[in-house]
Image 1: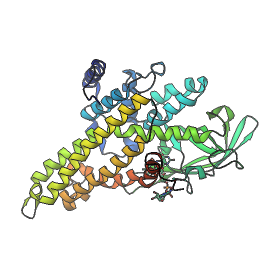
Image 2: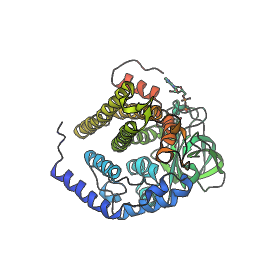
Image 3: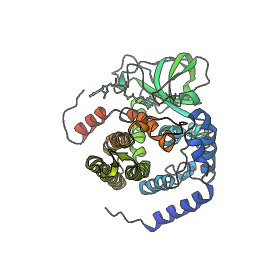
Image 4: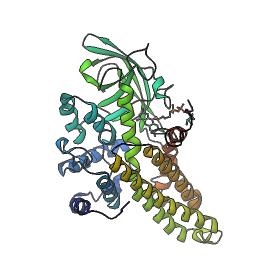
Length: 395
Ligand SMILES: Cc1cc2nc3c(=O)[nH]c(=O)nc-3n(C[C@H](O)[C@H](O)[C@H](O)COP(=O)(O)OP(=O)(O)OC[C@H]3O[C@@H](n4cnc5c(N)ncnc54)[C@H](O)[C@@H]3O)c2cc1C
């Protein structure tokens, strides 16, 4: 594949660069380590600004205020955002996963109703898929929706729902036909989180944050017009959301990881291990070099996946390959950081002795979830084993 940028790609990158130079907030470092509950209004405001410049959802079609960006342009977008250390956007699930699913499966009325407020971060979305007994085996979910006239009555429980605490709307997968085979009786509903009968409870993570929640639904009335796609075709709609989740995230990580490794190399030169700089320890050197090489491999894998997708138009198992690669690489990277920093690596934000304001302890703890969220490594390997290698299904 040709890795040189075309004239269109260069123009896209330069326009974005100039816009970011004038608009990216300069005080993000003051907010970065604050609890998400405090920084959320800041992230909403940043997303609104991006939307005003038509940069909030570059991959979306132009008619929905996107830029119909090619995959290479999307990669450039995330590279540029990471290069200037731009804050993340508030409505990341709405923009990255749920908005594209509504564009693909929604009625015109649904698109008109939901899309503008996803873009402006006026309405934040969460993804109600996992349940206490249905994570990897999503098709085993039990939350039930029964049609009563013009409404569904929803009862059940979801868990690990990121952004549940701030969610205005939820893409909820429910069982609408208990008699059908388990993949066949599912439907996706768009649920107003302010509806009577919805209860949101925080779950505290080991980072100290409550990024995700438990959701309880007790006789929640959802208008029948809020079905996304077809009744009992929810499996396909939900898989489409997961495909966006697994495919898109890797693209934005390359420069973030690059920043980590550059900083770690700098730290290794200055931190003493047994009376000499850690950078002179042969094992640390090997690990840093290996990680550096893997960060480049991640970028080339991403380019290859984009190139194939552009050529065939059909998303393949590349999303699973990327998902395993970036999540496990991030864990190795944070492990090396702890080996270099020693006990200082465990100090939290706010401790004056903590390196980089406690970023390394937070990152170490948060990365443990990387190999679980958006499908565990084992499940991704099953997908690759079956769809790439042609091995028999494992389940
Ligand atoms: C940070 C974070 C954010 C999340 N956000 C959301 C969210 O917003 N919305 C949402 O719906 N969910 C969310 N999740 C949930 C996530 O999707 C599930 O945790 C994940 O799908 C795994 O399901 P589970 O936890 O039920 O584990 P299980 O499915 O019970 O798996 C337990 C173990 O068994 C292994 N296993 C299971 N099946 C197989 C198999 N067939 N072959 C081999 N091994 C297998 C798994 O790999 C795992 O090690 C989030 C999770 C995390 C960590």
